[in-house]
Length: 187
Image (tube, rainbow, N blue to C red; front, side, top):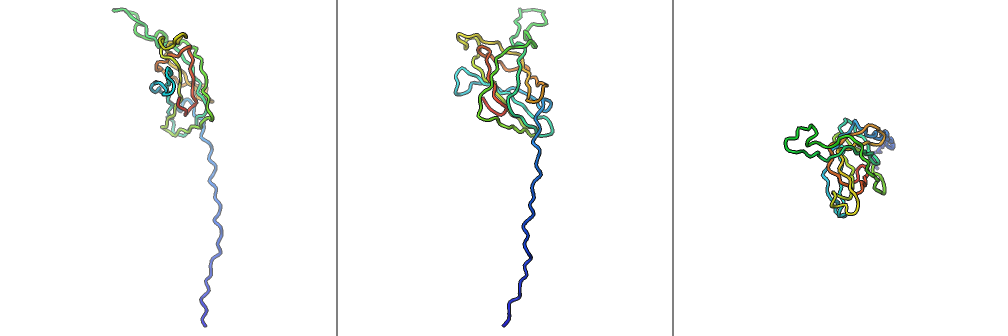
């Protein structure tokens, strides 16, 4: 009787465990990493008499960066154009009445369940939104409205330098009240 040849099997070793090196979290975006522009103001569908103005931030750096939380925002100047009579030689004729004086608006943060961690690869953009009730003297019945500011200085968390957005789309908030959403949350 012939016996079948014996097969020798190599001992099996479990594969070596490999762990990916821990990646450092993306650094926070700085003002120098970003550019800003304004989207088009429009009414949010669920709130008649209210307007939403998206403010876009684009990463122009060569590396991914992170935004989390709310922007800081300071309004300045006056978008009201100085009227002129025919033949008025004044250099201020047809220009904003002020492009630099500070403006005092009441800014409140919108409530959210959780703040998103927004990662911006080079060239990517995100936004936050200014939400306000009004639209001018005929919309703010019984309450005063604020004339639109000329521009805004926008600050990202952890950086004291500002991104300047001027001119700013028209904002005529009743009683000067504006709500702001965090980065990555539409209003």
